[in-house]
Image (cartoon, rainbow, N blue to C red; front, side, top):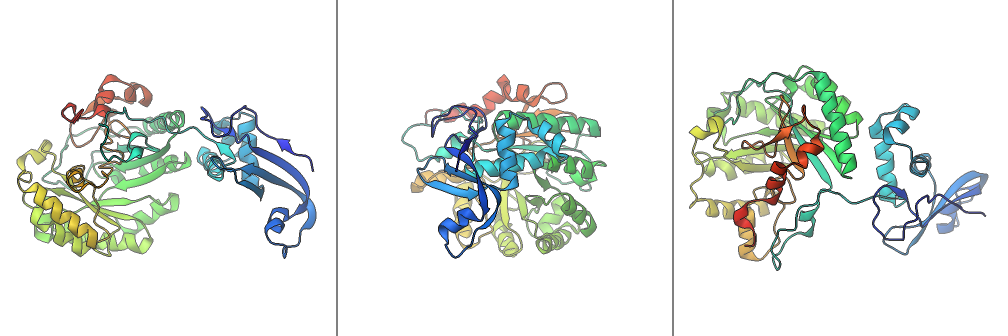
Length: 431
């Protein structure tokens, strides 16, 4: 049998690549039998006469030789890369979305048929030597756009950090944002997640169209919103199942409803039951204040077996939240210890706050990833986009780094202000 090599770029085995290439340790072999590779492992399988393609290759990073029957998608992935066809061009030629093409290519990379560059979202190595730090904290495989598609909201929460009356963006602007985001993540070799929020994102008049456009580009999608009717959630499921749907609770019934409105607590519990029924990963976020600190763990117990994840954010004392009181600094360490103990007993309790690393430092255990993973994600693997195009490093505080309606996302990301956020607090340098 004659092997046909598809490698078009000379790459030493195990070397770093700068673009997606065919695995140089791969041979595409035409054979005249069906089921030949399975027969090599199990002689009870009887090969049948017929033309087929077999792939013989070494899995990247190993010396293990693999032999498999090439699927149609695998052959297509090899053809796209070996011929240098762009993703959008391949999608157009095939009459499919670019997301379908990217999924095919990603599966081929995962299988080891293609080699792909690592993420170019790499944090400056500013951590001190000798500390227990997760090495993955320096490089992020996913970039998240938290997209506030509208300021319209059906609630008026007492701790809301932005009640400004921004005009909704035009749908055409939203499409351009998605194309820009696609190019940015493609250039930086990372997967993309769009987290739709607001206001209440489902009140944006073009939400379904925008959500479908994100799905068509192969983006993971998620929603930070309020309770919605069963029919509305089924519409979203028909487009693409969200990675998660996050709602908020601010304590038990009386405390929560004093912040978010009468009846909100019971509506939210019913909605969480609906999400569970539909198989949607559910998250509950609490904004931690001095008034609700003592109810957090009791609420977590109430949510046991009801949600997949329960976490908290500390109060951002901006906007209307400036009228509320944060947890007293002297009370916070004790709260963190009790919360962490509860997390060991309750699988839904998550450790999101970066300050849990204070306990990690005391106890000599590895530091956690924090808010967005990989340390603080502000301006690194995460940015927020507002309806007027403003890009912020973090939505919890004024942190303007640019405007996507005026510049490409890459220009905002590479700007001086975003770079400052990626450096982290100057007070922590060299500690």
